[in-house]
Length: 256
Image (cartoon, rainbow, N blue to C red; front, top):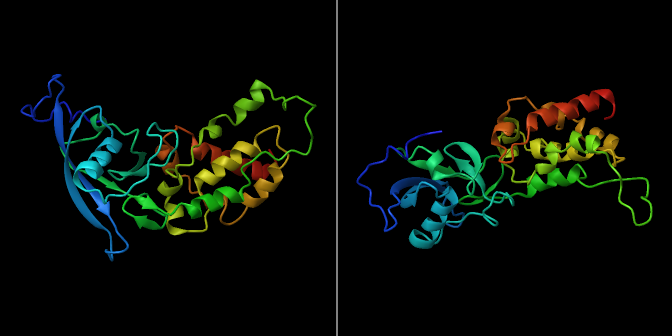
């Protein structure tokens, strides 16, 4: 974590409350398919506070400087996952990335996530990502019927086995950080495998063999090169690489 905020020029003005503000340069990779043949970098100077987020800076640019800037965001609280983007070369959620955690003595580079078709500015086409997600059948498949007016019972220990992978918010940060995904448009990608893991290891589900068969494919779990990019990129702290390894082991065992 950088301490650059504390080292910013002391002559920057403070507002009436005495809170220090900083002039931060953002360099955003812009692309308008109706105008641009190739993406271009555009710089913006934005006055921010240390506790502001990158999303706040993008809002300020769009609302006060250039209304044509396009990006996705919804909840702004790290839950919806819609504002995943590359910030200084790393996949992050703009709403969770604080200015104080970045080195503002240098420009902050912002661009769309990689590996998915670029639509405009920071917006990519998520359909290939969700197509892989749908293919692993991300829903409970049970052959038995629970007792009338009863839920399907599961022990605390059984629930703990897949607890980590229930945290996925489908932001695509992990998948679009994967070098294999960048070069192979057919690879399922980490997020799809994480969501398969969530049901493969759910004791209430009866289709683990179906999902393992789907992932035991040349474009499935065996394409993972264990670079840990996905784990580092996950804004929810999911141990993505570990989950993929556990699915590989299940494939080798022939079941969970």
